[in-house]
Length: 255
Image (tube, rainbow, N blue to C red; front, side, top):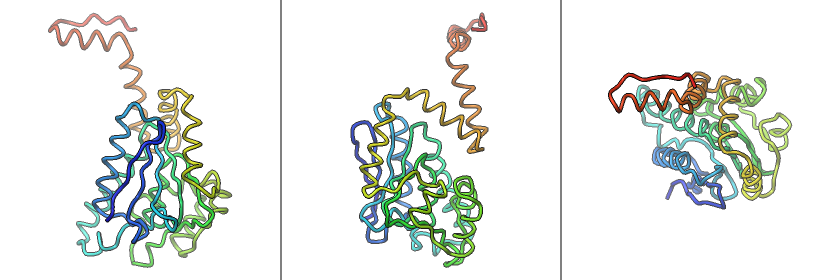
């Protein structure tokens, strides 16, 4: 039975893709649960970081389950499958807490795109990365041609998407996509997650938004979020809300 496991280790949430018989291929149901899990983590102030991994030893995620989208009409495929996936992946990308992908095995297609939504990536020695969509007559649909080109050199993305070649764990680190190779990626990811727990949660959240704005990862939303946070901390905001509730004209101080 497929799903997305959830448990807490200290102050870190661990999400585990669970569809081992199909190399953790993503189904519609898994995507819906993943979105809910990310939302829950985002709103839980006791959780400081998120680690994403896959069940078993063979695969992190081999992409989208073909049986979930193979019979969709072109319109359904574009309007729902691709756009829903983008919405869910973008939510993971923009969560304010540090995220780590523990790539315990193969990360193909949508699985590679999903890992790319995290802030850091660790790879197991046996892991390989690929964009094999052209083998089934489609193209990367969940930002494989967009977000990945900010994380890999352009040539490496073309190598995977145009020639069907795979990138091994060591080369993923050499190219800067992953931070290190680890025999036990989940344990190592939890160690790294624990390292940031002595830092200010608010500072790391704002730093993440600023970095995303610099690389044009939803820049407009990031700028507005930062501006809104600054205004929300002002005395003028408190006065404006109080005046509205009291049905009077505000007396703004500019502080």
